[in-house]
Image (tube, rainbow, N blue to C red; front, side, top):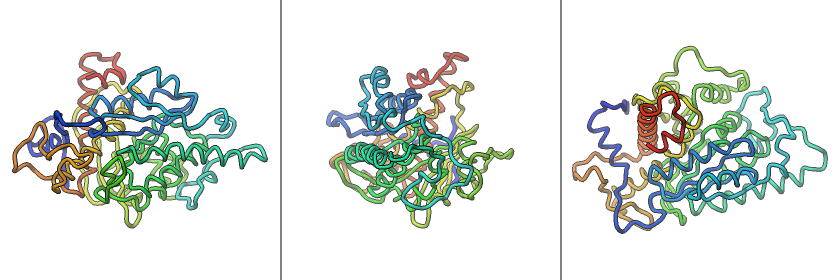
Amino acid sequence: MSTCLNHATAAADLDMIKRLIPPLTDTARKGQMGKVGILGGSQDFTGAPFYAGMASLKLGGDLCYIFTADEAAGPIKGYSPELMVTSVYSAKALGVGRRTSGATEEGGGGKGSSVLRLFNRTVGRGREEEEEALVTRFVEQVTSFFPKLHVLVVGPGLGRDPLVMEATHRILLEAKHQALPVVIDADGLWLVAHAPDVLHDYPSAGGGEGGEGGGKVGGVVVTPNLIEFARLQAGLEGASIADAVPSRKAPQPRDVMRVAQALSGEKGKVTVLLKGKEDIVADGQRYLVVREEGSKRRSGGLGDILAGSMGVLMHWSALVLKAQSGGGEGEEGAGGGETASSSSCEARRLEARDTVLWACGTASFIARRASREAFKEKRRSMTAPDAIGT
């Protein structure tokens, strides 16, 4: 598949985008349109998870859970009562800021159950048991919510503290075990660059279902910008991640497909959305390019909006697949497969292998158009909340 999405895109492609958007009905129940979890935020960064969470709700998701530091929970709750915020660790107790938070100069690709050896770490003697207990509690707090979630977004504002990275590594392993769809952005990509094997053999979309969240179907997306993409390449090649810089030559779809394939391992399927002048979405075999014009103003938070939107669309694409297979509403379905914009029985079908590609392409298309419309009104003063409100 080689498709370009822009404001003049083919009618068939626009039809596919419309097919991913479920209708609003009298019989819908709270939660059916998406329950998204956000693992992010820290004592220094509270805006990113807020933007991701609000984008998921404004797009049409029903519920958003944010898992964050004690120090960030209060501010995020104050931003909006619509977000359900849970403190999962204390930065003070964990010693965030008392250790070197940067990564070592060595490349990624490390194996083993712990990623701490990939990061510089200076801790006092005798704290190992205490730290292990805190990390274990952190992981259990987040994973206990997995049965409620349709998708987990990892990374916005998370920070790079070694113990936070260790907990996140374990959380991703459990998400993989449960085939929970995941979107990884921002600081989550820092972890993946150092431990890319955490995504190896992640179940692909369509791999199964279950749990209270319903329709757990697998699928994992990473959303790097150019520098984050360079770090992923360095980690996969065993080169220095700290020294990674974007290539002077713009990455091509084949480059993105190569990274997706390397992250996937032997049996998995990782999708990469490379953000740039044009967004390239690719798995190991297929790709699409989003050429929809975005904003000329690149304020902080726009990537978080994309990540939160993508979480909802991954769930919606799973609902379309379920409806096409005759699943109907089911426990958590969206209805009989007919979208608000397309009722033709001849409508183009969503192929299981393209589920995540189209979810990503649609999220990119919507986020870029929303940013463009916000920029038209606000011009140079535009910030992320303006895009969420369009």
